[in-house]
Image 1 (tube, helix red, strand yellow):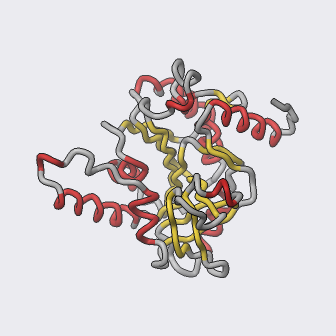
Image 2 (cartoon, one colour):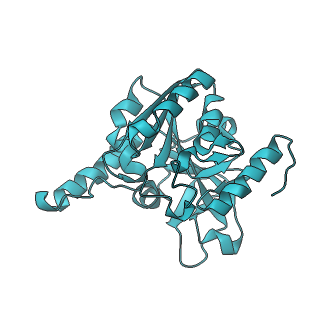
Length: 269
């Protein structure tokens, strides 16, 4: 099997809740437990033997990440590239824009990881689950359980408990839907490009040429997951390992604690 990994790192317009920490260094490079935040993602992906290439997608100026990428290639001995979006294209728009680079070499599937999440990513186990499904999955989501109160702050998933097929998906619902939430880690079939392409083309047809700005911005959550839920094309792998988003400076401290604790360094903040 040949796999790739895509890490979505966003850009300089994001991360306002991370200030002032993000003023001097791009948020993906801010140290968490002594390592740049996105290095934890790279380390987890590099540990999966079948991943041959890691692609960072975002709209930071390339020079801000050039040295970091070179350091990561040297440290993990794996092909890593940064692909710069010309504007914010959304969590699915960027993947579609760089579909030729992702598809190069004909990978059997590719991981997608949001850059603002952290955790003990069970990528091996998730891949085993994805490949063992009796029906091909267009996308497999890593999910975890949250409290009833916390759940409305995330994408909520309703699954078939026996097959783990996703029956319903709502992004940040206004009322309680499910305590199963989206971790922002996915395994995608290359067939997903066809689905995203259909959305992209429909938007070009809908808007006039003078009104096409923003039609490439496509969200994986609202534009892909919500419509295909209940169609047999999306499944969920549930993890009970620790996981968190890193949206604020305080959440970076929480993440550092967990990373250090998982290494056996029981430091408390």
